[in-house]
Amino acid sequence: MRASNATGERGEGGLRRVVLASSVAQSSGERMFSGIVRGVGRVLERHDLGGDRRWVVAFGDSKIGSLSIGGSIAVSGVCLTAIESNAERFAVDLSRETLDVTTFGKLGVGARVNLEPPLKIGDPLDGHLVTGHVDGVGEVVALTPAARSTTIRIRVPQSLSRYVAQKGSIAVDGVSLTVNAVQGDEFEVNVIPHTQAVTVIGEYRRGVAVNIEVDIIARYLERLGTAEAAVGKSAGVGMELLRRHGYAHEN
Image (cartoon, rainbow, N blue to C red; front, side, top):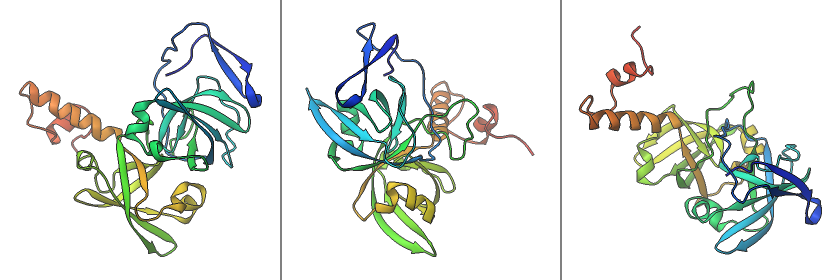
């Protein structure tokens, strides 16, 4: 949800508070991210409000700076709307749906979270297109040293495993990673020392829950396949379907 026709004023703690000119905030369009985390923040406050929740989060070492009121930020892979902000921290509301389908329902004060601002026109896409709409929660099942890197094995719900492909992209807590191997409902990623140092991945242990967003292309390909199958054009995703919609071509 984005705020429109809003002006800013100072609230408690010097945070700039949103004042809406209308009673309903209107969407201003989709925000996209690249999965290149800018740093790690920390949850400073947690307030339960009528069934949902509000967080105040410190920017930490991210150097993102103050957010626009109603602007977006990806917090451990979840696209959230800033309702208050200054140079040191920002506040966001977490809906019941967000608490239910992400790891946020179990995170408390002191939790460290990955932070990434949305892409702007002209920004390089160093990772892959990430929407900030988490598909589900996975679990770290193994961590294995691989030279200076670490191979991490993650189990995902069966409903998501069909979207995970070897050498494809996936976002784990908002970090763009390449899938090295897939076996059943588990996949492996290799995480270099830099990524471990600048994201919460360096704190992973067995049993840790992580937010998962599958590659948006995989979702659209499935939708194309099921839509065409419904009208009898195709039995599913194949090379003919990919060529017809511009995802593949003849050499």
